[in-house]
Image 1 (cartoon, rainbow, N blue to C red):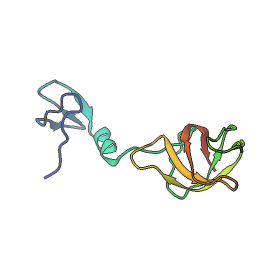
Image 2 (cartoon, helix red, strand yellow):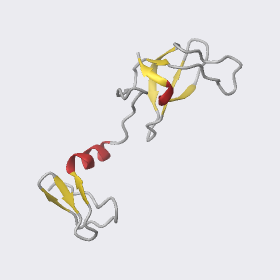
Image 3 (cartoon, helix red, strand yellow):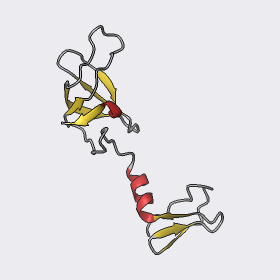
Length: 113
């Protein structure tokens, strides 16, 4: 038997499928089944242009960034190779550059190389 998710608004488990949507009879909320499948898959990590990022990708810094704990700034155009995704956080990635090790960077300052 397939798993029918609980209602995202009220949390009740009396939901049922109706065509391409789920419906909650308790609060009347309707949402597409595709959205429920994407939510179950976990957060998608995307760069500043909306391109999906995966572990092992290379990214480029799009603006100069000050790095806490270092006197060396991260310059625009710096390539970060072999990135790692932060678990349950779609806004940050981990990696290191040629000069600075163990960086945690926000994805809004990165684009896929």
